[in-house]
Image (cartoon, rainbow, N blue to C red; front, top):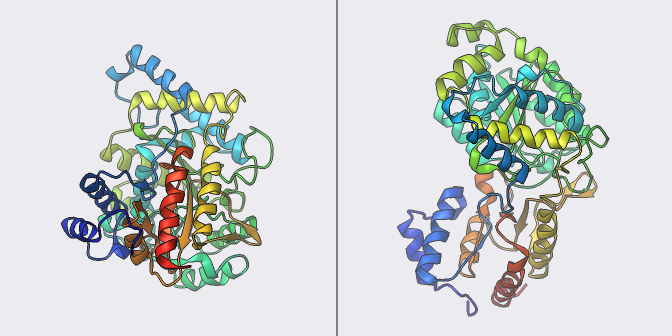
Length: 437
């Protein structure tokens, strides 16, 4: 290794200081810590690909609306558990306009980010029916959701979708559903970390099986409409954001303001529950939480006791953003299309250096360029590759921790502005010189 820019012993020392013996099993925060330590020790700014933080300015409409809300004194008042009425109304319009799904505004609940939405949902769904308490993840996926289940002491199982796309998905799902213990199926679409997008065929399979096996689908739409291969930005016009809600009423989906609107710091998500599921009653819920209706339990038992609602002023911000989107005054993708440009350039640089895209297809179509992509290199496990790239000033996340069975890394484009592409190219060329592919 002759072209590395970070001393080998410095990397070894900082990994030891962070208590990490193998990056293969490192969490996102572990990698962040190591990269921070190495930046400080070397005075070299890293190419930071490990953490999915928004890298673009927030929607100005939201910022102005939140400032105005604070000026009129909303901070004085507790927010209602059900949320700011205008937010729920605009959210229901947004779901209709951009997903073509009808949902009662009363069944869209603001949460402290989509993280609270999934946490709350897990607490309820794993208690709906006795003996049906296991969550099935279609992986790779967002690892913290599994941590949430660890925290509440509920079981989960996972499988890597790579070998089970299209028609193969039905048999794989039924392999688990036939056992009778699966209460919910979870996936993100577009996907974190692979950026795969489920096809309509796959969503239909999931929806049909959810009805057949009375299983609830928890659809994570944190990267709403960000499949840039299609323009999903025009209200009331096809194409719409794909969703399992077209094929079943057994759904809950979560919408985040963090990525699409770059409004991550104010922690505002939306828990959207189908009308029939919101009102559905479960005897086991009554035994566990004292209320049998799922929607009531989610809002008045779980959200109430966790946070007593979510902060008031961000609700005004997101309501204003959604209103502008619904009225066609704000194109929901105009502020985030730069991620597509960054991903396209970064993929090319990695491929020129001998890397391959690990999750590369949706059916017969190349995956979209977007917030994430996945990379592998011949002869390296994910953990070894993540460590090797540290010597060249590049930090990334091994796919293993995301539930993938394939060796490789998640690369996030959000912190790599176009002004950093030259630096990335230089470092990848140095890597290529040392590894000979």
